Length: 183
Ligand code: ATP
Ligand code: MG
Image 1: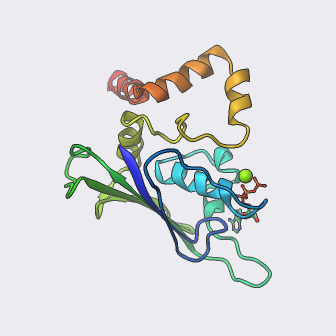
Image 2: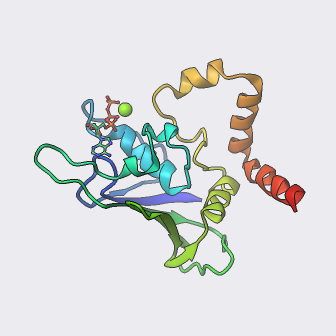
Image 3: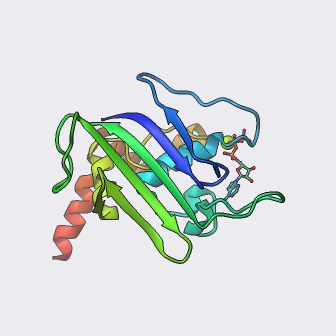
């Protein structure tokens, strides 16, 4: 799976719709302090199903919605779209044309968040599994954020194993096993 394009609207500091093409190879984000570099990485994590407010540097899930500034009113929703290139159909009931899969997550104040994949409603769990299987999940070591290197070095062995499992693309297997055990 390869990421091709990220679109944001109302997400954290990206109040106006913004679109970024992601070229093949390594991508770096540079800019002055506070310009939104970390917010971009968080947008990628969020659309992939991140459910922990803490790792989004917020108190609650709605904190990803543009909160307003002295000169601009707040927004009532945030939406992030990630366009990916996939080599095979990846979600049941979602058709893939030209090898492209667009995953969209949208949150509205008071109404929670919902996902779509190529225009069809899908469950949060399906999206998380989709990216976990592709080894690009929300906790993937492919996303290197501030403090991450130190975190890898100082991680407990069990935490480090989790990181390796994400990298190997087998994190989804644990989720499925837990599911199977509960049934
Ligand atoms: P640094 O170089 O210091 O790491 P950065 O480029 O990573 O900076 P971010 O942390 O991505 O910057 O962006 C911080 C900005 O995003 C702050 O100005 C903050 O006020 C703004 N911001 C975060 N959440 C929201 C929100 N919900 N609504 C509006 N603005 C927000
Ligand atoms: Mg930052």
